Amino acid sequence: MIRMAASDPPPAVAPVFAVPSLEGASLALRTLLKEGRPEVRATAHCAVAIDVFTQEDVLLQRALAHADVPAIVRDTFRELVDLHVSRFAEAQRIDPHASTARGGASAGDPYRGGGSLPSNDFAGFPCGFAMAAAEERTARLRARLRQAADLDVRLYAVPFLVAFIDRDRWDRKEEQAVVLRRGDGTYVYELCPISKKVAPGED
Image (cartoon, rainbow, N blue to C red; front, side):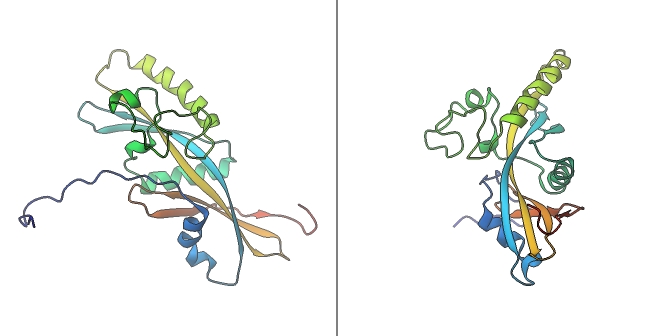
């Protein structure tokens, strides 16, 4: 057994990425779901984070290319990332230079399928909309950074769920929550500030 001195700093732990699931989201939302038996459904989405690092691997800037979702969901997702995500896992990296930087993706990679990533899918989450926006913004960013070759621009897929919580079928009122999974495997969520109301008889 190796013992660390009390003065030694804790070892750095690399983020471990896993995609969110409806089951995990339901567990994360259990404090909201403890009353009654509300129906919960979820839709899968994927944003793309554009992170800019120094040569010393220090994060300088982050921008988010959003999925094709309403503005209220985008705002909630951005707040969730700002509050809970300081670093994305290497398994989430999807830019064209990622495989070369890692020496090639492993054949058992569950997210890229052995190093091959369809432009419109990441681990079963649609990312084509966000990826197109991210590539356009990255091209503009790299053009501005021509004199700063020491900066490293990386793209990360950020899959998330939008959960719809229906507490009362008669009222037809739904609450929405954005749910994602952090690098340590835990789920975090944020309620959208405005619930969608549907009049009785409407779909």
